[in-house]
Length: 299
Image (cartoon, rainbow, N blue to C red; front, side, top):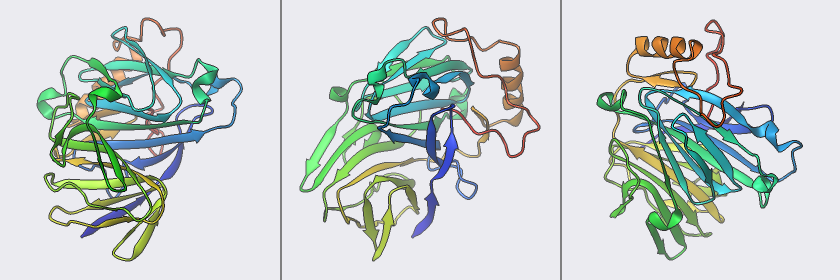
């Protein structure tokens, strides 16, 4: 059965960068290991200066951030000294582990050329990997499996689904796909994972006679095999996998232990999480612990 329909909420991750936030949701914190989903854009109008969209250096623990672009470009810098411009169709997979800081900058005015549109998800780490050393990988589109059928195009961003296996390094069983459907195309979810859902990036689909439009995420029970029909040209993100158990989330920190999040707060305040060496002049301070509701996460 259809477990829940999640409606995207508006949030801001920098002065001029507004996003649609889907996960976490109060009635559904995670889908498989995915604990966070933001959709930025599309932004087509010139913003002056473009730096107003920058997300300044900020910390993470206990998760992997996964950035995927439909359009534009973003410069990533992190504590490891990595500097990577991500382009459409590429995957930036940054594993925070025991702690990392990173920034996302829009330094090139051409970042908005053709429209900037980005998806960022967070994948919680299994308990045994929560304190791993941080790491970063960029995967170009030619390294990601693509499948086509009548009215269907899909790219496997990470994990395994429909007999495809991605080269992207993950820490637990999951799937993450970019799917393009032509009007009238029929599509189903992969069956090999316990928790499954899809987010409608643009367009609309019908399911059992009910129409759902962009900005909604639908989550399903295992054993349910919905038939998704594209009402128009539609872009979907499919994701899910095996659940990891309870996770706590505060600001940009995710952990299986509340006390570990308290430690991360203190580590950031005391400067024990290193700033990116090539972006260390400014950073986002720890939000007020007493703020209600809890501070909005940053990407």
